[in-house]
Image 1 (tube, rainbow, N blue to C red):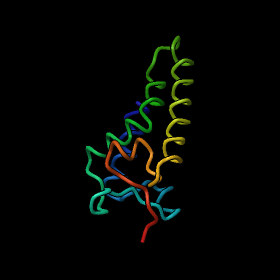
Image 2: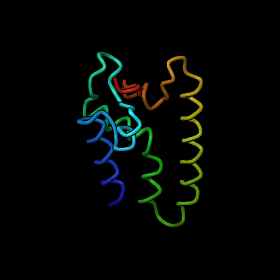
Image 3: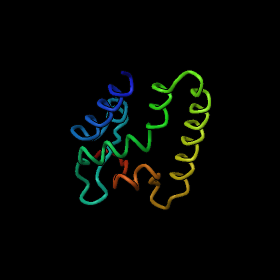
Image 4: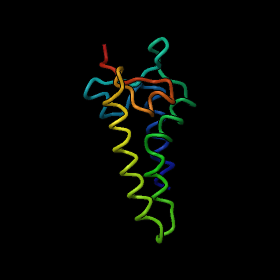
Length: 106
């Protein structure tokens, strides 16, 4: 299933390489707020669930509710952008829940 491969890609990249391919190319890394180390596998799963979970639900939902879920997922993404922009540390809800932050690679 698509959502399983997406879950695996993001969580493995965040856990072992501190970022996805795109994040690494742009010199961004996802690290733990405490200590700046790579986030744990469970934190990566939680971060993915908050960040991408609604879109994953669209891929497995019955045809009749996909449009509703897609609109909800888009609204959720807008909220995450808002929560990131309006946080003093520029940590969105997904980062605060997972105990992570995105920073420039040193």
